Length: 262
Length: 262
DNA sequence: CAAATTCCTGCATAAAGACGCACAAACCAG
DNA sequence: CTGGTTTGTGCGTCTTTATGCAGGAATTTG
Image (cartoon, rainbow over all chains, first blue to last red; front, side, top):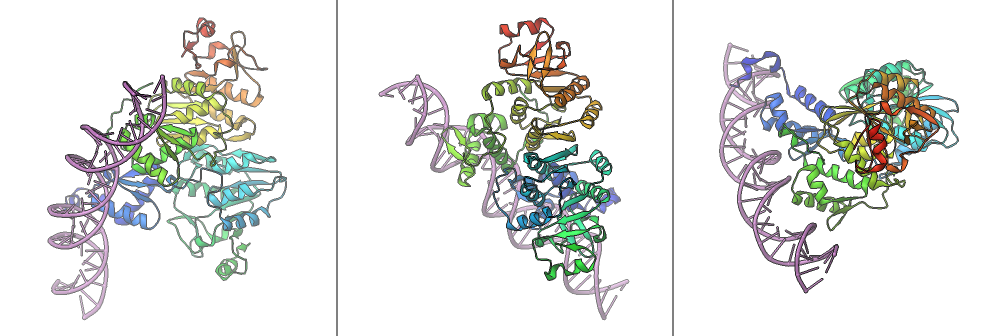
């Protein structure tokens, strides 16, 4: 019935999931998409696009608005460093993470709000070198009196506010940090650490490979959840830090898998 | 001001949320916006702006007043409010600088409050690539809807809030930007451009060498002043932008020395 | 107080969304 | 293979939303 049945068999395999992945990628890339452009790009009806946006929105991956969709970075006003929503969980996580840091260490960090909380909570007397490509995190490190900040340069990914690309990865590979703190979007037993932004995943992979010790920070909410793109197996993780007590049953499988927990 | 000739009417569509995010950003930065300015900037009717301001005001994000809106003074953004010195002049400078930029250009900028004002004033429709090592400037570029941002990585110099060092210089040398905008600390006829931070000077030298066109931005107050470290001779400068009218006698010697003035 | 903005209230219109329905393709027992 | 079920997609119709426009009211300003 539809004309595309005969035109391009390769495009025929543009399944729903595939299409949604494409849309999500576009949103993450450009921070916004218009339904109209999408439907010409993918050659489907506006209805289908709308349904896709609807679903993605229900999954919390994008924000649907009249005429298209936006990435989350739009209404998350984490730009103002004055803690709008003070999150006690993240504070707790930050405290545990800080306990791992000693004077003179060389620390590599990813982005994300948990890392940001860590950055804010660093004790003023701490002397260390922090390296990151996350602009918000760099801002925080910069305010600290005794911390040296190394910026990883490359193109900025606007939605994650972090530099991504081959230059960034190459730079990371030259380093051998004592600890790598990873803000973690999803972690589970089967798939290990997963994420939803391809560029960020590449970066995290490099960070994990380079570092002497890899520490994942995450609120318990994200434990046992999965995102589409694989970052690393559990075996690569040295420690998992959540706001939970180490004895919490939710963490037990991870301990059994050989991950330290704090 | 300059006009942006726009070929693609489809891309002109700015989603409501997007527009409001932009407005909110402007309000937070400048602490005030005028409806009239906004409606020419975003190219929508004044009515739409008013409705946006209305909604943002109802959400408590701004304070609507006759003729525009104000930011909540308690929610201060750390950088914008640390007493930007002589802002009206810098705004004027920024406007002149923006007139030089066209869609698709690759722009290199240094740091400093004048550059920051330039970054804030970039019209939302402008599509260009900006490269900088200045964290505050990067923050601004990052919030712009259509600008790609390349971060120059290296160690952060805390007092100038910019990345400095051999890595940064090496990176700059690989580039060939269309325009280089230099925030300028001191300039005079005999010594040309001078500055007071060794690392920053090294960086600026590299920027000047790499760029097709070098534009110095400075408030007139700094004209005919000298700093200890030499950056470059006047001959390297293609254009000097101040808040003054080009006919001002203060600028005459520079014009005679072959520097364009705006 | 008068002139000029700016604001508000409808209203018109075009675009986008929601909902029901049809139909093809895939899926799945038997 | 077959007949039923599920799923995905597109098409109409109707509703909602967004935006601009026109006027009269309200306000700032000199």
